[in-house]
Image (tube, rainbow, N blue to C red; front, side):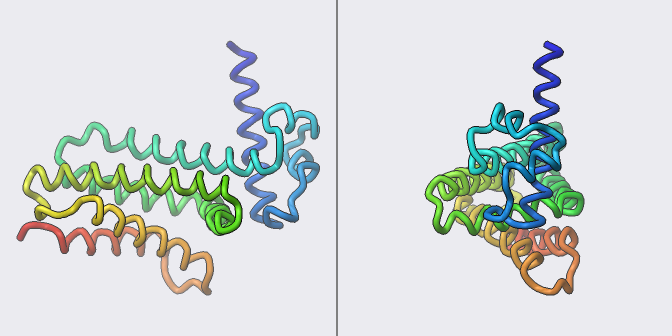
Length: 198
């Protein structure tokens, strides 16, 4: 059991080193040697966990996304009121943005690589569908409780996703003139106000 925990910790060390390297020089200019040096592990140690740089790139994305989603779900699951639960979800998502700009920067590169890499496109598509489904469930609970109008929750969830993705994509690709977490929270709250029953 102890051996398994040590391996898990080393794998996370590799993820952290890889994240730094990918953000410093980009995917194509980052080598396994560079990641190994940053993680203070042998090149063979990297290949013990990942068969290629692309697999490491993809696993890093899925590991961090799953970690954040689980963290937010754990925080909101005890809240019974649908409106409060959605509000808490927005708040927690915004606070995660604040503390994880390094991952969001990586996310932008990952997303754009899906333009030409079918495997990365499949991973992004899965992430997109899962996010839409999660938003849809949160909004549907509000519809069921007559907090929100009787709307197509799938379409609304997609708009929330587009709004959220657009905010952080803009934040990392222009000279910043807004606060990421604050703008994200404000824009989504304002949008959700438009679907509330008066």
